[in-house]
Length: 130
Image (cartoon, helix red, strand yellow):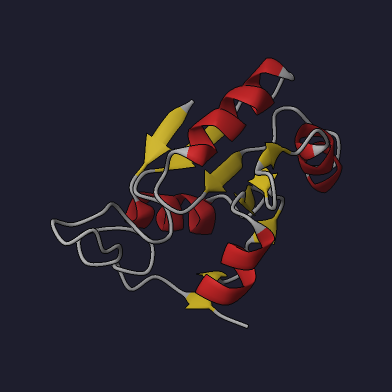
């Protein structure tokens, strides 16, 4: 798996229009915190018990058109869950998996707040909220 900063990911997605961009956060995070514009949503894990979605790989495969070589770019809150999701995709035969470092909201700062140091929103990249 390769890792891209948010700006690198945005450029990669622009330069590779066939790439599939997947937000793997929970449904609540996706809708209420916001998400990158144009991203697809497939939860890696979700509440109430935060169990791993047993259909994650199949749902991504369906979105990818059953192609294991289509580039898949994953984003989560801070870039951690997307690593686990990416490893699952690689184990299932996907060969071009990318993780967005720092995710949508970024790492925690000294005050335990996100969005003040890095991440998709911090970089001013396109996003939307319901």
